[in-house]
Length: 113
Image (cartoon, rainbow, N blue to C red):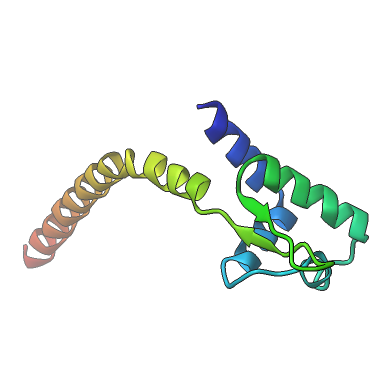
């Protein structure tokens, strides 16, 4: 649960979520990741450290560059955790559908009277 908490905490920030979304399309350098944001490179580096600490990204080495890439493991753990609640939501929506259908049936019966 600690790792899941760390992952959720890392993803709580919109800038970090945007970085992860960008990395889902492929590796990128710090400069490439920083381009869409109106924040300093050191601020982007701090965001990357949080993501790296949570295991969401890894940094490689290619000459002078240290490209970042996404690590899917923690995201799968989130998906697995959310999946446990799918049954609850499915049942809730089924009950809502039944309730709404009964209301519609009642409205149809009242209209026929």
